[in-house]
Image 1 (cartoon, rainbow, N blue to C red):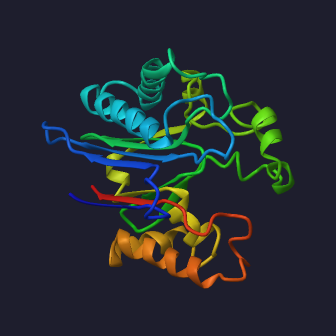
Image 2 (cartoon, rainbow, N blue to C red; image 1 turned 135 degrees about the vertical axis):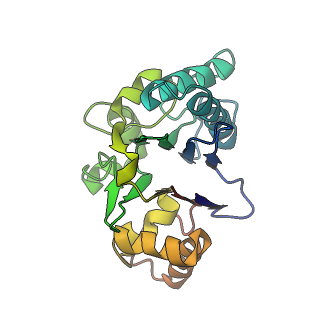
Length: 261
C-alpha cells in the first residue's frame, strides 16, 4: 500500500480551510481517507464565533475517530454522528440555524479486506481506479446542475438553494444532510487506487479543461499529488485575463489524497 497527501492554502497568509487524513488502523486490514473542504464564508456574519478551520478540524477529527474505531458503521451514519457531535460543540454559543454557519464538503473512502466504501457530499471528488486503469469519478453534481444565473446572488442562494431540496447540500449543523450524500460499496478487488480532491485541485479538469479524470489521476500517479497542485497554480497565475477563473478566487485551497490499495 502507498499513500500520498498534499494540502496547500490558496493564500499563505490565510489558514487552510481544508482537512485531510489517511488513516491506517492498527489491525492492518484496511484504511480510510477523510477529506473536507471548508466553505469560505462571505464578508457578512455567519452566526458563529468560530472560523471555518475550527469547524473542519472538529468535523474531520470526529470522522477520523468514527470511521476507524467503528468499521461496522456505515459511512453515512458516521457522518451523521460527526455532524451532530460537532454541532453540540458550539450549539450553546453560536446560531447554528444561520445558512452560513461553518460548513464543508466531504469525501470519505474506507477499505477493508473485501470491500471499498465511499461517500461524497457536495463538489469535492473521489476518483476510483480499477485494476485495468479505468477511472470512475464519484460526483455529487447537484451544484453543477444548477443554472449559473441562480448562483450569482449570494442571499438568494442562501435562502433558496443552500442545504435545501432542489439546491445542494454541505455538512453544516444538520445531521440529516448525511442522507443526501452519494454513497456506495465496491469489491476491493475492483479498486486499484483512490484519489480524493477538493475543488481547488479539480480545477485542472473542471475549470481549465487540461484533461479528463483519467489523465488527472495519471498525473498524480506518475508525478505526485504535489505536481497536480502546482499545475493548477501555474494555470491560475497564467489566467491574467480571467478567461477561465472569471469571478472565482484566483487561488483556492487545494488538497489531493492518493491511496494505492
